[in-house]
Length: 354
Image (cartoon, rainbow, N blue to C red; front, side, top):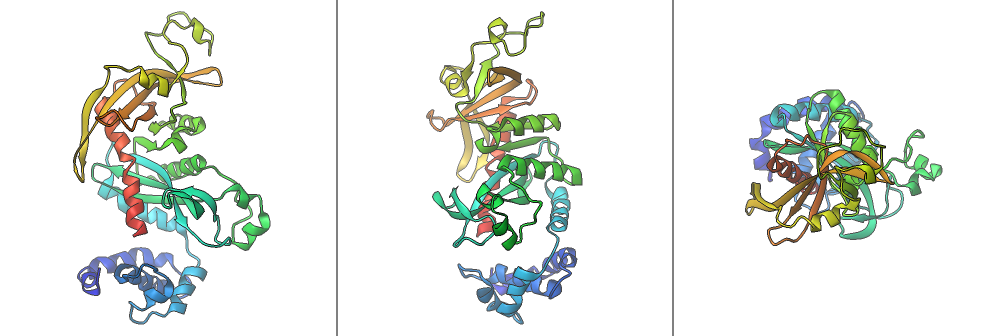
């Protein structure tokens, strides 16, 4: 936007400053933060560093903005608390979805905390970047990013001197992406502002059985993408009335032989349904869906009963596989709509990166 656009939003900008400014009780106070935010909103430069931003804001200097960014301590926890409280009345509804995902920010050098060679979807290849794990909140009313955690790879957590030099607290240990995601979901629920029935995410999270089990234990319904190699036993009939040994599929008349979700999808034949799950930028979003009750099967042991959900394009390509712990009576259309919420977080990434 240009300065005149920001002037038209002066009242809303002032309200934002009154709300979040008190968090920044440090060098320069919120005056520097307000200047920085103004620079981000009106600056058109591709490289939005302190020097470029200062050129767009009266009274700002590169040194002052850089000191605000680099040296001013402030509570990220309080900002997240305010953010989630503000988002709730705008977006909250009973069937809302917590969305978990990660994204990379390209970085040069070796000293930025957490920087390492990762695969980054942003880059489309392995490259030097920082990885953040994010929590999104999505409903039929819209979406927002509501929390974030920096992912520290082992090349960092195994090097205490490097961590200390970058300001990483001594008590920070290695945590996988699913562990970080679970912590954010639990923290959001504990704050009490945002309530959601569902959690969704890609196979980085759905492919982690401990993550699925933890969500189930917390009373949340998940619908998570999983790898094609995920082991299951199809449920082919009602459970037997006589108890049988746990993990012994051969004695279970209600179960088929162990297989993978990929092989199960190939055998679905005429069980596909064509469903329109919403409107996209290019019109109705229509896919073919199928579902099958299964029991998880990992390390030779049967798990709980779940629903496998399959989605593909109308031409049969781009197969997606999901597992959900939602009750059997949840309509397939709703499951498809929940799965589609996963992409709202990509919109959040695009908006914040531009």
